[in-house]
Image 1 (cartoon, helix red, strand yellow):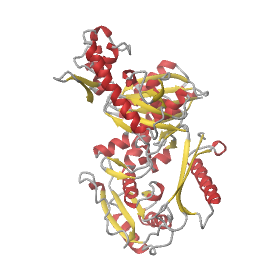
Image 2 (cartoon, helix red, strand yellow):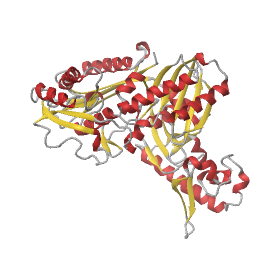
Image 3 (cartoon, rainbow, N blue to C red):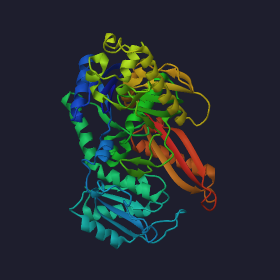
Image 4 (tube, rainbow, N blue to C red):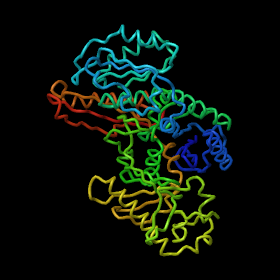
Length: 516
């Protein structure tokens, strides 16, 4: 059986074929077109033509896509939603979407704040106002097909959110799409609510890319494959799960690269530098999985707190434009020729000096026609490389949590522009198949489940609380598509919260296992 891994980037759609022993059989890069699925079909077709394998032998197909991110950033294809917040009178001081930009507020047809919600310790603030909830959903029936429900401290107790969801289905029908904040975000009502609103607004986008991916594969005769989508913690989810939680595909590209880099280099703890045509993303691999961001993340101007990888991006890529300043100094980027590098870079017969041209001039890479950059002054090229080195070394320092040197893994097609020695790096590795690490990361990923809650150890002793959290995390991984016998606990975290009474801790456990 083979695995097919695909990652859709802004410049190229990468595809890889991996055998049952997780060896890379073949890799291809295909330009990403305006129609994403044309790029996918082109990549799949090229891969199948290259390998000539029996299509029926492809048992799993994995897709990493930026479509949800693009929809939020570009304000396109977002569905109208209704928002119900449960938390009056305690939360009425800050209205929903109060800090959202005007050009995206249109997605909310109507919002309401009704009585209900809980304290930090799970005590009820007020009974859920079921009549108000029913009236809200009745008013929206026929106007929207997606509802977001948030509740104060629902990550501690989700009773009111779940009951509101039941009422919503009674009133609006079983086909309504319901996003519940306790299943999406972390502590912090406003940020969690924001993530839930975005998730609700993305349901049409999710339907389109899941159905479109299945259709693209069927067009190429790949009909026996189980289909999975990459999510932003470096693991996979089923098509149904992706339709329920499309927001979890945001930033899956960098995490795929991080997972792929770890697999190719056999390093479980390192800094990963993924260089594309326009930008460079830096992430950290910890115990084989991407390090998660510990702060609220802004997506398209919207502040959220659902899980996101800890990624640092800089404006440096293979297509970054190199310029000499009047004082003799040299700048590299942040502007880039991007996907037009094969037309505009000097080594390809263009007229723009890029970072790739510099690497070829210095003998670091064999791309295009080296004769076309021989005229570049070597001193200029070395100044440009020093600038590139400084940008990357400063970024490595940003990602480190101590002064110790760390292993560094270079991946991405643009990584040919980086030097082999970097300050702050114990070693610099560029593994085989580095150019398609993102698609490889998609293909070899596991399935995960993450459980998070506030627990008072005075009420439930620590050992019992952690065991309960581990069981919940395992169950969540299984429900997402993992084989129970293969699920392992990969992260356990309990953080004391000094600002809460008693011995309260934030408990977080993550489990991951092989695909079912």
